[in-house]
Image (cartoon, rainbow, N blue to C red; front, side, top):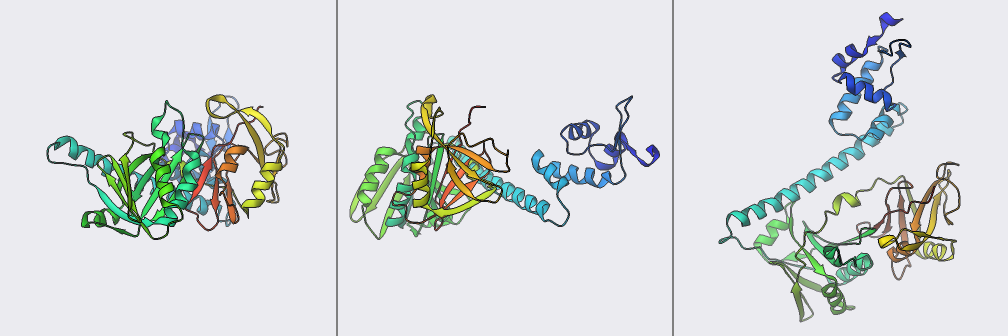
Length: 377
């Protein structure tokens, strides 16, 4: 009976949601009223919907995306799905807070330099990393360096010193590659303090020519490499040899939000098997490369039973049979595979229009992210 129902105004008052918000969530199929008056269109809510409305209000306050709010309210009790969504959102919030701390640290340094131009000089940070792991990191990201003259900042490799890690990052806007190298030691007390903090001690965009020269210098070398970042320069010393050069004077795009993925499927398979499947798969030529250039598109599929395959772009519509289908630039994905390709990979797929990641199973911090290709309707 209508006397047992709450009016939209009463539910708004008791839940902390506004009337307009309740109308929005009705239209978004998140919280539909129990009854709508066919003559006036007025919404009425069942007594049990107050708990959902209060939960919805709190989910909204913490910035949970609309699709996740819908999933939480619709989750089967006892399945753990709602709790997993909360865990994922908390990780996103913590990652965003860490990013904000890093940016604020950099902003403070810039403000200090602006307010004290005569007394403040950019700090130089010296540290050592394993030569072999630095060489592997350069090999892992080199393919993704951009070549667009209108985006000169992407024509280099970002060296980002962050705590006890040196991250190498490269992107051309269509794919991004990231590799981590452990920092073994630093050369000054100032560096030690910076390495122990949450903020990055230093970063530099290394021109691709200098990065290539560094890779050639490393060769098959073992042992340690000493790097110095700061004051607009990059200096590298290995095996008694030293090279140095100017860093690119550009701010590199913030890569961290781009590599926070929420995959639905994690597929483990040998790298050589994936390479062979991509080489032999049927492809279609579509205009989806840089500047609209044509590229060969292959289709990655995961069926309703979790089975993975590589097929042609005409393998059917996403979701028509419960399968996930992700179209990719075949050559981009081949370039993202390790050159020697003997080991295991983990392929992470989130959806037909969400980025996909390729990770060596034994080095999860070294991976590539590719944007999928939109297929014609």
